[in-house]
Length: 369
Image (cartoon, rainbow, N blue to C red; front, side, top):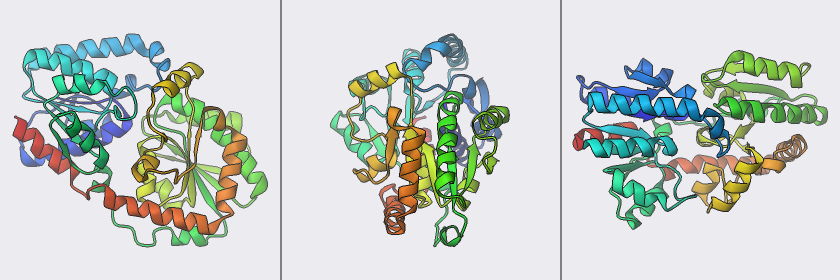
């Protein structure tokens, strides 16, 4: 059984399902995920799109749906009694499922660690009790779990499985007389409804200062087309822009820089060497609680990896149209800074363990069985 609760988890779960099938053709895979996992033959008992949510207070509105999904998952776990449960991130849901598996004597592999090193570190004790093995994707995570005597393997980052070596990838984008800025508002409905209007208002300000600039909006597979088109119609009806559905790589290929919601996509952009501004907003209460719980200096995964503020982070009140526009225009006006950022972003690849993460996790899974 594989459980991935969000768009990025669905992507990584699909690659893992493929790797498991390559090693064991008769493996039967079922669980929680999205269209990517389904295409790889995972039988879904719950669609992840119905339970994906961000923010502490934002969870409350989805509690009935999440509770029904949890009940469905626990029933499937009890009836089918899989040989292994694989959990992919999504901690508040997955740790409950791990407890149910433990009672049933089902071994648990946790792939892509919850960010317990960033906040609520005490959860490591629960993970130690419930999880048989951690497969982590960031180098500093392995040291954290070893410190707490949790069995762990650093497997490398799964994004490297599908990002090909890039040589001077953005030469044409850098030389074009028409700079293109990608707007990436996230893969959850709430993120898009919160962040896309802010990004569009910022884009209008940027256009006033840089009339030649063009914009490309990324629309995740998990987001309905009409949600994005309605927001564009309401906030920027006269702004020249293109919407690209699905693969964000098509946005990366033509963007000189991007404005992105904090999340996995920022690391993906970094591996393509694209300078960016990271933005994020949640409810005031979620932000207030988060500030008191989070133990790290940065929210952007790229900045956490390089252990400094390489990329601007605009969070909550700082994620305003005016501040975003000022930050973007300042960066575009400093080509030397952009080149240096690009160079440091490409260097991140060497820190992430190389390609093959999905295959390594598949071998750990079969060894646990």
